[in-house]
Image 1 (cartoon, one colour):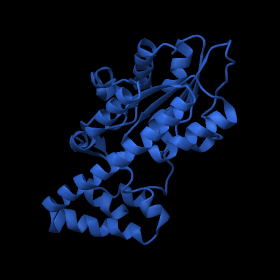
Image 2 (image 1 turned 90 degrees about the horizontal axis):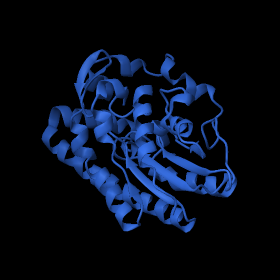
Image 3 (image 1 turned 135 degrees about the horizontal axis):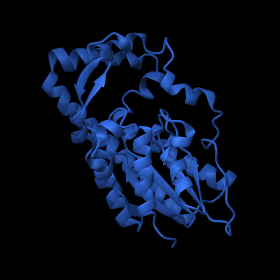
Length: 276
């Protein structure tokens, strides 16, 4: 895998990644992670509403201080709500139902659950858990690099899209199970696809075009929108707000800066659904 990404990025950085500390991730290592990212409070029914946020590192805010995640900022802007940040770095929809059940069984049945997700399900499965769970399978990445770059580049692209279709189907299945459980607990459900800045970003000292992300990711908003309509939930798409100034609002194609989290929190302030 390291060789593969070093080849793709034309840099030795992937070869030495992990052997030096990334100061941007220090908050993830220092915090005592339970189900929620601190700080959080649970409100009683007569005190206000509890809103549960579920997603991956974008919800958790791995590059942000805990006081600059969009969940925490929303809580500061709207009185009478408590935002429970259950974002899980590297989490996918495979994890979401378990997180939702843990919250309901061990902490509180929230009034609303907001899913901000999609990226990890489409771009992460081929890396994690394949090479972590099976030490032999990780060597397939080196073979894949040779195939896709040197032998069958066109054929490999078609194969990649075939894999993504399977990921989309699994994502849809997992999200539907989450919605069904949430509705069995009488929760408002809000579905938000992670916004991707599929632009040109500087990575490892070079400029790389992430425009191909959009082609592979376009089914995610459609899936969530269809599920929201099917189950009478809420679907929000804040890409217009976040992509107006993407160089300021994004650290990379998916993770938000503090300013980006501020914009997303304001979007939620204006679009929070009413109580059922």
